[in-house]
Length: 190
Image (cartoon, rainbow, N blue to C red; front, side, top):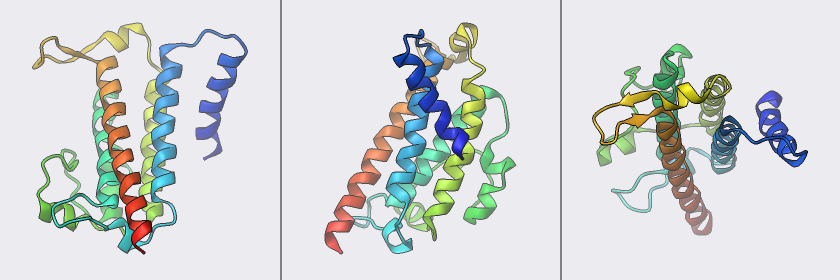
């Protein structure tokens, strides 16, 4: 666990010492902030808090955090051309969910959101740590050629690795903010 935090801190110190900041460093820092945000939002919550939804059609805190980790696991493992931690690391079983690699929560109905029940925040944090470690492995291997590789031609212009990585950061940060906001509401209600 310590090494996950050191990578980000080393990047910050290298920048302060006048070293050239590389694209890789920025991406590592951003993905580190996602991992830290998951821990900040989830830690200390019980099953009831993780399941909190302000109304019957809203996403829960647990679902939002689970979903953002699933999106990162799905998208980054696809870019890195490796198996998802969800499957390879047995996380689907630990969550008691389907091991379908495409099951990331996108398009979930109200009933499907309600069915994502997280009993312990450490499950979310541990899964986030596993996905972060896999993400770091890929990010540290990036070069300009890999960042420019086209990964989706269904868009105009086609999507490149660098754009997909930034897209995941944007999506994850939005969901982290939503989960943090819901936690704040929940804590005011109890």
